[in-house]
Length: 229
Image (cartoon, rainbow, N blue to C red; front, side, top):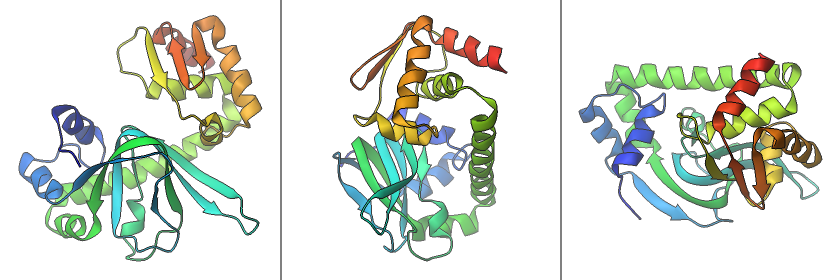
């Protein structure tokens, strides 16, 4: 278990549900929360478990999935640094509708449902932020559907990579999960299509080796997206 550092707090305050909260409100929300290191392969919760918590990712990757009757997995979503997951499930006081598994060593903030819901009832700013967060998630899925129809695979991959980079332009190396099929699934691609999209970015200075992707200049990816738009 570890404590929040300044970088963690900065990331947390950029999430829609926490942005603009007063220091006192944020302190109240974080009281009793846990930050833990979770190894690859650890199951955080199973479908049918009580939805009594949600998570914020400070590092690593987590997938949400369901087991099919024939034993395969259907992956609903893959989350990484700067994202939260499972928060919607706490509102109906029911069960988790999916399973969650760590797919790359992760450092996660666990927020318990009961104290969070109590704070939600007493803090109107938090309630508005939560509505905005849910709305943004719905808008994201609508936009994702539009991107699948309107954008090339290279552009979708470029946009995904940029989300893992700092806002300033320049050279950077980022780490993807060992299983790139997870990223492909998140982008609505088959693994072979993902590899071809990565190859299309090579002339822009994007190279990959195993699970690391090197970007010579993130500005080139931004230019690609703008040209497609």
